[in-house]
Length: 237
Length: 234
Image 1 (tube, chains in turn yellow, brown):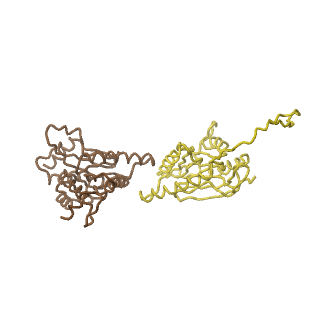
Image 2: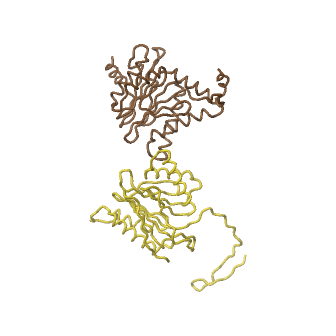
Image 3: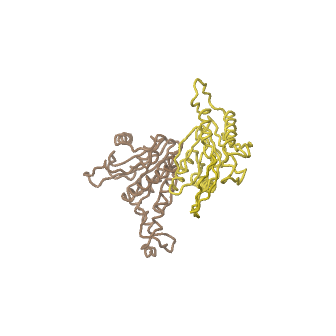
């Protein structure tokens, strides 16, 4: 094969090998970025996500939130491959309607979480490329967060971050909400105001360093009064 | 009658618009041992006659009143083997629901699903309808429920009802005796009296079965407990 010579960093010549034409297999998945976060309080829950939709180095949209309202007391955040996010939320909506028609009541947060686990595992051998986090109120009115992996493994949490900047957010939440690695600190319960401010702060930090996170932050605050939405701008670069 | 000519196939309507096989299945139920269900303010009572053909039978090894889940139970009138098939299906359906929603199945949902199974057997090839009517008792959240499920797949919610032999006189008896403020203890008493109306011979704790469904769940009464209630009647 041909060997074209290029200069490397240290001044010496670098070997470059031309390997010939390469065929690329069709990939059914693509990564559209986005970060999701959910926090459960004593009598409230927050589900927040950025609104940037990207692919590679391009931005598809600056206004594509990843929070989807399911019932008056439950919101789901989905990030990963946008095609699967859309399909999955449509399927969940349809299942919610079917349950409501036959059971004459809305699904509880716990039931939605359990059902989502079975839906995801149903595609164990061609998974939905979606990182899900459900936030809502449980039957006693307390905040509940359920976090999932793409094939349906789930558990109830107090707080969880998912998506592209999750590795940046999760340790900060561990420290601020879970009081991890802190000694001699008074562990006050998390108030609604502090939780919202914390969510804004962590997303601002994530937008600084993660290219897939930015543009705007959508916060859904769930209380027994209903669901309130708030949008906060983030770095657009 | 012209109906007879249409009884050869389940899936053929007769001129009067009936499916004769289902009518015959209902006759099989009406010829079966009597069973009674009563919904009280704080629970549901199921009772049935369990007459054995011989004293050599080991009556403790087979039961008519059976639990489906912790909070739902059922009893039947009609063919025992058909009942056991439906009982098994009902238990599986209840667990399938729990697997998906991690919540105990609401009674009405279970009844709807089991009735759907019974309907399938009236519209499929090579099968016959189930020869049983089921009485399903359950407790969801804070409410008691009593349902009847027929061979046709039709289901009804009842305050009180009777099935099997002499069910008409049983129902008439209940119409007179039922009121909304009954508690479970009174309902058990009334259920046993209803069974007694059509009972031939001496009623003992070994030839009837009673089940109750309350806040704490569904359970079959022990023979000792049944004996106490019987003593209150005689």
